[in-house]
Length: 174
Ligand SMILES: Cc1cc2nc3c(=O)[nH]c(=O)nc-3n(C[C@H](O)[C@H](O)[C@H](O)COP(=O)(O)O)c2cc1C
Image (spheres, protein in one colour):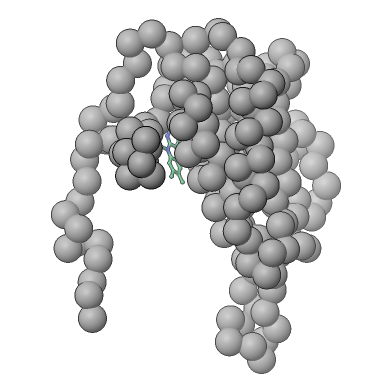
């Protein structure tokens, strides 16, 4: 499958089967995140793989968008480890940690799709509640949840998957 075929065929899965993901595939998905580019190669991401019943019960209690997935990757970042500019540099103190974490999440989402594993990027949750249930240190912030698992039988992309704005609405050639 070419990259464009993979990127086009991936869609948000919102109903999962109970079938657990094989350990080898989980490792590959995590590895795809590990090799993602990060600003100045700082690798500020902190990845939590929720796989136990207890961990899944906790995340389901604070987020409605886990969709019955057997596992969930929590993508967080250590804000003290992101590449940061000083005020006198061009990027005015900007901290790249969250941007890095989203790239890591994208890598894992696409690798999962390549392995036939479904996922859904979830942003609708209380960062504070997820931070609390995981007992994260103060320097770590939660960026995204990625419930993952095999899609339930018959799951199809939502209408949103096909709804693309005209490229000239989002691209400006100067
Ligand atoms: C940053 C971000 C946050 C999202 N948050 C949610 C969410 O909280 N719940 C959900 O069901 N889908 C969420 N999605 C999935 C989008 O709704 C979905 O990617 C979009 O509608 C396109 O559909 P597709 O992924 O099937 O191509 C999110 C996606 C992104 C990139």
